[in-house]
Image (cartoon, rainbow, N blue to C red):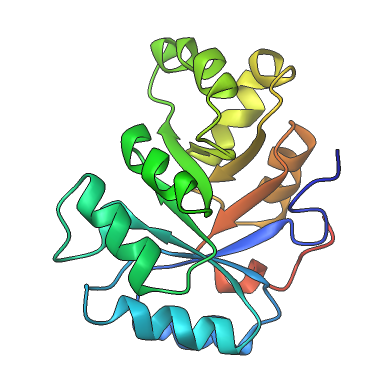
Length: 187
C-alpha cells in the first residue's frame, strides 16, 4: 500500500497566526492546525486550503469546543478540513463516519504507553497514529515495526538529523513547528 505521506514526509505543525502565515508561504503540503477558536478555525482552514494545503485540525486544541461528539461534528461540518487529530478515540469515530481522515495522538510516557498500540493498530476509526515525542520512535522501533497504521513522529523535532532518524525508525512522516524543516519533504 502506498504511503499517504510518500511525497510529504515533513508536516507543518502550526500553533500561532505567525506560523500560519509562514506556512502559507512554505512548500509544505500537509498541515496540522493546532490552535484557534470556533470563530477562527473555519477561516484558517480556508486560507490553508486556498494555498493547496491538506489540513488536519487538532479538535482538542480549539478554544470554545468541548470534548466529544459536538466538537467533532462542528469541525466536520463547519470547516473544509481534510482530517482531524485527537487524543480521544471516540471523537475520531464521529469524524471517520463523516468521511474525514483521522489521526490519534499518543503520548509515549512509559512502557505502558506501548501496550495499547496493538489495539490502536486494529481500530478502523484511526487512519494514522502520531507518537509524541517523535524521538521516542528511535527507541521503540522494534515494538512498532509490525504496525499496519502509518506512524507520524511529532514533538521535539528540532533538526533534519532528528527527522531523518525518526523516519529511518519507521515513521511515515514527522510533524514539526520548526519552519526551517517545512520545505524538506524528501527525507
